[in-house]
Length: 317
Image (tube, rainbow, N blue to C red; front, side, top):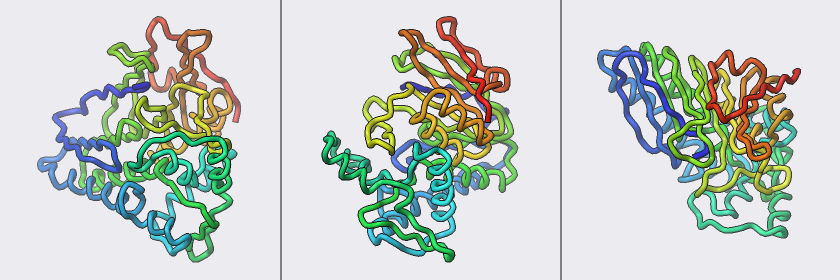
């Protein structure tokens, strides 16, 4: 993996459980409760509710909306879509919620993997763009002909946020919700996370600390579909991996995707403008380099291995 998480134990003896959520492993830990089972159940129920509404891996509210081309939607779907459209505008289309036709053609959502040639890609790209989504005053969503939504770039984060609120509601003193190692939120106790290079192995490029915040990670998985640049329909290749720390997991998830697509100074500038912090892993002349937003190394106690160069991108909002 390009970025692997080495999670420190929560304070005390946490109760843990893990299940599958939206095609990924979801782990929830909770501390400070005499009886943790109800808290874990409430958190997983929150994840399940989001999957029932926003998954494209099984029948869902979102799938029905795509099939119909328009519908009145639930508050949850409306909240995620609203955030998605706002981020699409802020990122200049580097994040876009309408990539479903391209992802499906390439074998997403459990289909057979295949390459998408230039001609087919251009035809599908004509169906992509946030402008193809309309939301009226009553909250009804209307899609242009051929358009379809894929909100997975935010749905995992939204689900993590809902699960964390469920844990907090039970009176837990600390907790962790982690979906697939790419969307994570922690409260009540800090975590130490390990940053690994694309070569894998046991050695880490560095470590940093997360406390009362959310983390979103975007990376190209060796056996997964590439992350596409919505503006071209082709795989994004600016960076090896991108991570964003934000107040909410939904914001961290979407921003990490935009940062992966934009890369470098442009992506980190967007992260800072939105009040978040971020880092990208790149190679410069064969040397591993971690670029970060200003203040990241001190705020999050970033420590890199001796061979890794760290540079702060001091961009202004």
